[in-house]
Amino acid sequence: MEAKTEISKPAELPHSVPLFWPLSAVAAMGRAELELFQRSLRFLAEAQKVDYGLKPHFATANVVLLELHTLLLRAFGTVKPHVAPTLIVAPYAGHSAAIADYHGGQSLVQTLLAAGLGRVLVTDWKSATPAMRDYDIDNYLAELNVCIDDLGGRVNLVGLCQGGWMSAMYAARYPGRVAALVLAGAPIDTHAGNGPLKAMIESLPPGFYEELVALGGGLMRGRVMLRGWKNMHPEEQYLKKYVRLYQHIDDPEYLSKTEAFSSWYENTIDLPGRWYLQVIDELFRRNRLAQGQFVGLGQQLSLREIRCPVYLLAGEADDITPKEQVFAAETLVGTPQQEIGKAVAPGGHVGLFMGSESLRQFWPVIARWILDAQQKTG
Image 1: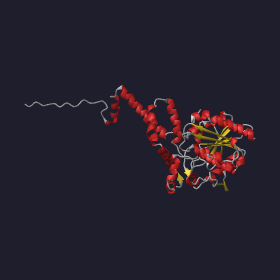
Image 2: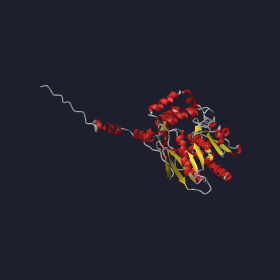
Image 3: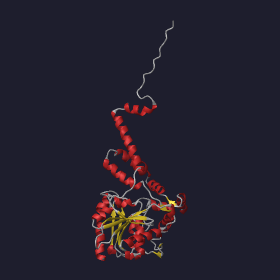
Image 4: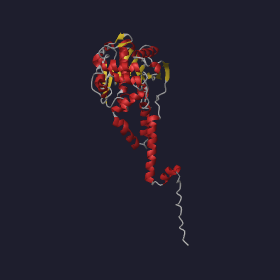
């Protein structure tokens, strides 16, 4: 009689069904592998958070004084007798105005308040809607004028980047309404100096920008602009920042700073297509503001009409607005030479407005300069 060979069943492995395979893999890991696995999970969660999970916000308590079509006028601090309000004209270039009040202890608003300016205000620009697609620079100058009317008709203007040329336009159009003018990282003469932004605008045909606006339904979409900014430094934006994030994934201070920056940088606002194309053509291609040919609110604007004290702040490594574009204002305005202040801060463009070193070393000096200028001019 032939003996039967009994085939034994393989031993059941714990969690052998597919649902539990990841758990089985984790259970089989050594301690070092498990720590590496957990670190990688924390990194992936944090990378998702900084890229998509945060929203910009103002760090300092404030009240909204006005809500207009293009902006919210935010007020910080209290009215100080005999000191004109200081209005920060924030950049309107695809990101939130929260850059002016970036983070507790790292805020231009807080720095100016601490230096004694009393009341500080910020233009919190709105994202453009389809109904705003035909707004142009005049719409924004007009609403800036409404804000200054409500603030008593005379202010100190602090223009950051794009807010700088808008402030210069306003001061040229209404010179008696500006007590002191600060231009920080502001492209006044857009043909001066060299930089990737200037080179890009010079090299691409106008139809390229018109097509971008058409694709955005009449708006220049902030997400498209963000891709453009990132592509100026692709290695930094698509590789190095994630390497640093992984290296510092267990450093709460580093994560806090990264999240604060990403909440601003990764969230964009849209711009009216007509406004955007006007800026590209008239300001950057034709340089009409510096040449005295730009027409704002019905008048050809001459920067020579600006006679108030002027302070110019540029970044040594600013590749968005080279310092030559900022300092060109010195020879274009009508302000006496002895009433023009200027400084070069180390670092790049955004650091001028929210960098710890700039806020500590340069902006308190500018605040005191504003106060001194106001005492002299009354």
